Length: 259
Image (cartoon, rainbow, N blue to C red; front, side, top):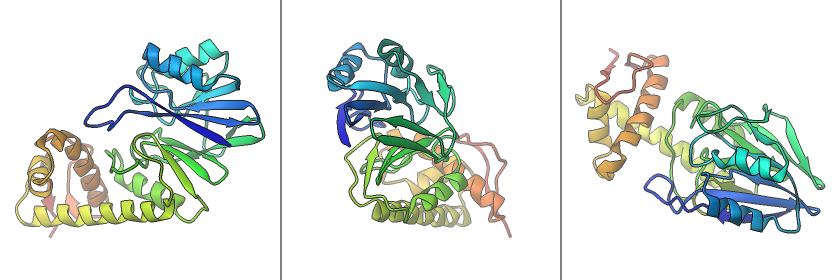
């Protein structure tokens, strides 16, 4: 297997250097994973990385606008299917893939592993001992989470399955998957404890929790932090640790500790 990264020209506070588009080749056939934003120059760079290879599919890890919008255009140009778990605002899969299904190319297969949490449709793709994770696991950064219970379960499901490399949707390649997954889980457990402490010390809303727990974080990231705080609170409410009007997630959404 040969893996080539084509970095999309969409750097930002939330995407880091940009979206990692992966061109994965095996026996002169290839797939593209996360073609990213629909930018002509980026699509041209992907096609250049495919030179001399027979493309078989364009795969999407989830339908966010920094991962999926180029998929349909690129797939049509290449004459291959666009594959993903669900449609999005600028993405319509030609083939809707489910957990355990695979896309074959050359002598390899990309096996879909459902990893919901960041989004409900988040899908990772395993090829041998490598995993392409989109935003489920990112290099050098944590992620925004919509469903914390699903997210932590998805992380635990990947631990100890024999991975040696993670190719994330943003940031550098990860060479110690189990250690990083352990760190992700520890971070979330620690954050959950901080959130509970903030509530017990008087935080009465999502915004109060963010301002107390994320006081050292760039305020520009606080709206994103609020989404993850709300996800933690919905999980804690389901466990009976707090009262939170799920599925509320706004800055002023109220929260209180249970007796």
